[in-house]
Image 1 (spheres, rainbow, N blue to C red):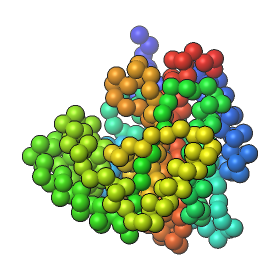
Image 2 (cartoon, rainbow, N blue to C red):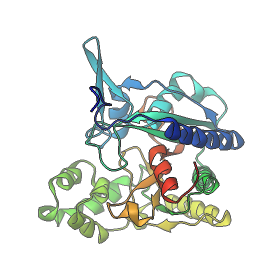
Image 3 (cartoon, helix red, strand yellow):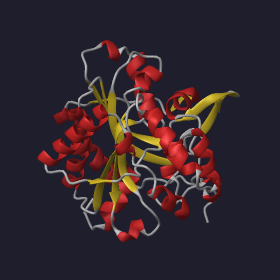
Image 4 (cartoon, rainbow, N blue to C red):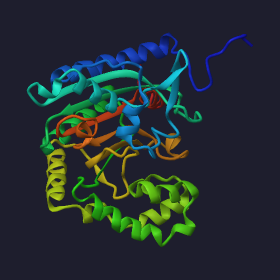
Length: 326
């Protein structure tokens, strides 16, 4: 056995893996250019508050996934666990909020999470992502979802399903939270410890619990799309209608939420469907949605936004499983 090895949960990308990553980056970059997304590269290390302020202090990104670092004994820094918050910080710092809108940006970068490594969940992993700032119309949601669906089709991924839901905007969120808190409160004694905590801090995220009994309880909960405001329903109908006109297949999943607090209205995930992956639980190969309050949360003006990110490590594994030549 060699004297030194890569840190636990991290791995080398040998020539074959690096070539596969390079090939996927070339496809993402070419598609981004056709759609009008310019590349952005943010630092690997950010102020920890960038993630705490945007993701929510009780989110996985702020809790299980934060990989803290220190510089000459000075803390308060973290390796980025996701790309949207750093790109939003850069959008404001560079004054892009004062440029003609919308501003479309894409990235293809490594990320880090501090939680225990699992199948296809490394401590250092790679993501590609799209962020579109300054576009409130449903067509922007359609654009990022259609981009992703067609990207997967271009590289040969077929064992995948698009799931959609709407969780409403900030104006309607209190009504949704009240209804869900009342429902889940009746089952408090049956929820696991993690879900009990989420019930108190971010009730929507109870839907994201993995315990089988928690999921069984969540299946009977009030549907967010029945509780959202009329404007949210109109927006979601325009999103689904736009995808149908483009021939993008989807399935509405009422329990679908995202693990970060900044999401509003449309949320989406592309799930692998090959039993080799699903036997260990659901694995998303891309996920995202709308975040209309994020820019303001970070100290900028009120500006809508929508984005999506995909896991490169997961995508490479899925393509190899299908026998696609990389």
